[in-house]
Length: 330
Image 1 (cartoon, rainbow, N blue to C red):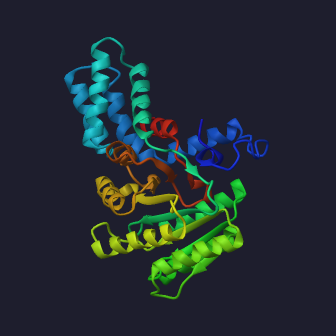
Image 2 (cartoon, rainbow, N blue to C red):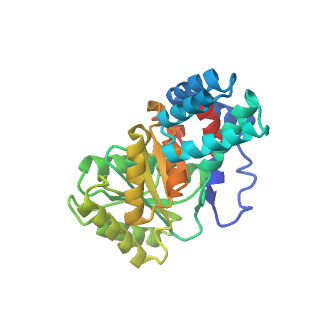
Image 3 (cartoon, rainbow, N blue to C red):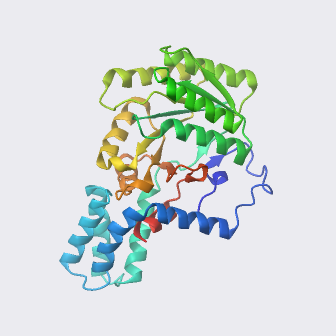
């Protein structure tokens, strides 16, 4: 079953709002899976054509080589692919698995297991809970922040303050302000060119003053190779930590799925600078290489917590490992 927004977050009381969050109907969840499956069509077609052509017939050495090629093409990553294929080959050789649906089912199970790593949920126990969002230019970072605020406000009833710490891109500040209005949440910005750390400081101060549940701080997009900007991002994190011990409570990195293995390199370098606790994988609807989610989870141990599969509000959703693996393989 697909994860709902209430499944992603740890709130103050596990029993609070149980009736309100009884869960979406089976039809709604089935609809979400169907939409995810369609949005991941490019990845699925690339993978499934190879899987269907090989796994259901002769389980020869060529079978495993072709499966490796298919998984690597989908950007599952060389290390992750080798582990998955070796496990399948071993189980098939020892008679634990036969071909056909059983083998495909086991492939889905292994991929889902790899995708589940680290802490899969986001705690909203601190008041305010501070969420820092970072990423490379063009990964959909600001849109993700806006959509996340909307869902926190509408789905969970949280009061939210957004901080526009991208002080160098006026269009980004304006975009985030529009999202704050759409979501009906608070908004803090600084003057153009202001110190991003000062905006982060003011955002937390405003969240405390207003008694907000969550403060989400959007940062300027930067390349992982820009040492000075990465150092600036680390400084923003330190400013937040001085305000509230243990904050930011969640640090999300947006990664564009269409960048393939470069997304893995980005994640590694951002994680070294700011201790990334979760990933938002965006633009899954526009790539045949959605397996990068598995490569990042397996090689870096960073859980994917949100995925973006389109432009609509409902196209940002909690990551579900089982649903993702099924949509990936088809």
